[in-house]
Length: 80
Ligand SMILES: [Zn+2]
Image (cartoon, rainbow, N blue to C red):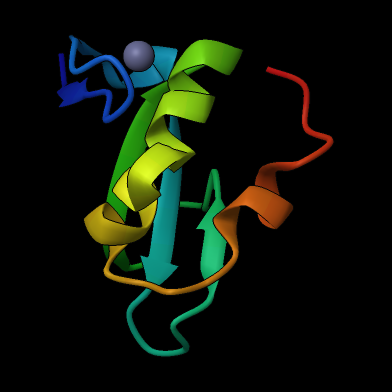
């Protein structure tokens, strides 16, 4: 089993229970739940609003992905 850490609450969880966000290595595009061919720096957080908001707060997610993209806008309107 592959475990990953949620950058919102900091808990270690199975990969399947987390949302994956990847910054594509080549293009720098931010991809939510990329397919297995997407290669790049990734971050994970739980399927709930609290962790999503916590991950976005203080640019945690931006720092984890080393991007200055507007991740809040990207995630807005998505139901988790
Ligand atoms: Zn979490």
